[in-house]
Length: 380
Image (cartoon, rainbow, N blue to C red):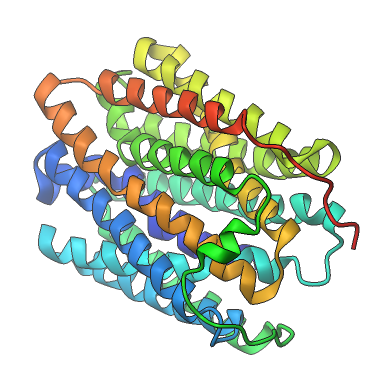
């Protein structure tokens, strides 16, 4: 299961910001157009989540996951040969849409047969694999550019990812066997979402995280070059550190939430996101690098905690319907920041205002979390 989230988040989502400076130089030309590419990922993810929530009651989760891997892999292949921005957006749409089928089902499949008091750690490990892959992609990109002498290289990175995604799909088809789940009505379900304790506050906080994730990650490499003055090799090294930070942070936060509660974990993560983003908005140099690494460790943890919270109270296909509905609200908000931030960066010549907005979103998320009353989790 950890390999599947690598396809959805490391390949389908995190690779674009890493390669964005080179893609921008090659075929995009401005932050405004770069933001459109990032918006395409999140818009497609929203459409994918809507579809998954609709069909989750009629199809086995493992079937949805396999379809998601195949779709994202196809998108990566398109990106590997994209000659212009229009084709690139097509590839990003496929990659983003397929990611929904993977992420909405992965927490459920990974925790089948797992005791509730260990779910946070298990899903944390699932999410931590994204950090490992992000570091690996950054190291591989840096090595490929060094060997080729081409700092603008980006298409071969997507080509390798498409091949790896194909291998993972074969492994999932051949080797992964999941138990059958009960058939339920398939549709986005507010009723299922409302069955969660403090569902409004939990959903509102997750929506705030959608704005944080989309706004922060889409221009990270570009901001490190323009605001912190880092060269492209150093940016790749920062991504390596960010990935390792995420690899440690997600399982650790998941384990802590098993012991002390999901809400406490969410508050700690959201607070760290706010501090990290404000530091990027106001700081410079090594201070910004430290903030990026801190944010990296925390960024991947919040989806882990939210998915685990939902999994604590819902089971099997109902989880997919409720979590999918919650993620639809996340997706509606997430499609806005990339394009908005690209326009603001071009208009002001800086990424300071966008990252200040991210910090404000974190504050709003903390306000929502203050309304959460977490009941005791089921013991079996």
